[in-house]
Image 1: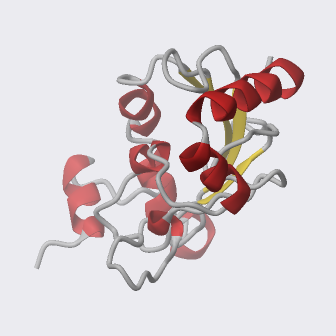
Image 2 (image 1 turned 180 degrees about the vertical axis):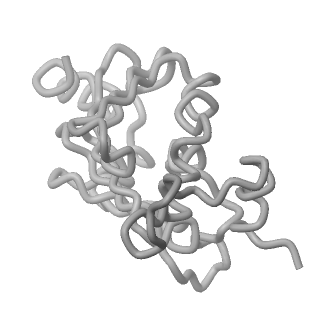
Amino acid sequence: MLTLASKLKKDDGGKTGRASGASDSTHRVSIRDRLLTKGTWVSLLHPFCTCKASFPDEDKLHHFQLAVSPDEGYYQSGRFQFEIDVPEAYNMVPPKVRCLTRIWHPNITENGEICLSLLREHSIDGTGWAPTRTLKDLLNFDDPLNIDAAEHHLRDKEDFRNKVQDYIKHYAR
């Protein structure tokens, strides 16, 4: 059976991920860390040139911030900061994502909580997190959490656009 660990070992040319002479208990590299060092950021950000990742601690690739500057749609001209923490059990469990910028969005509360089916470990509708998902999947938002914003969007799209622009003017520059 092909496992992720065996795939990573094969990709590394049979290397074990340990420094020579180091014991298993002191230098074991997690699957998460190995996945995050294999060009993940280049492939994640390449199609989205309006995104930029920054790492508060460059030794911790699993904790980073993502600045998103949409170049089209309601949120065009805004700059939104997201904090992403990829847990040790990634890719079996989803990353934790929080929006640091106040935003008027149907799927993000004003406290930065994000509601996405795919961020749930278990989802009734079957769209929750799965090991086949990637960090790139987090850039798609279509799961309502902010009911007021969702109803506002359905009721009056032009007024919704104006409120989004007000939020951008005050919080996302």
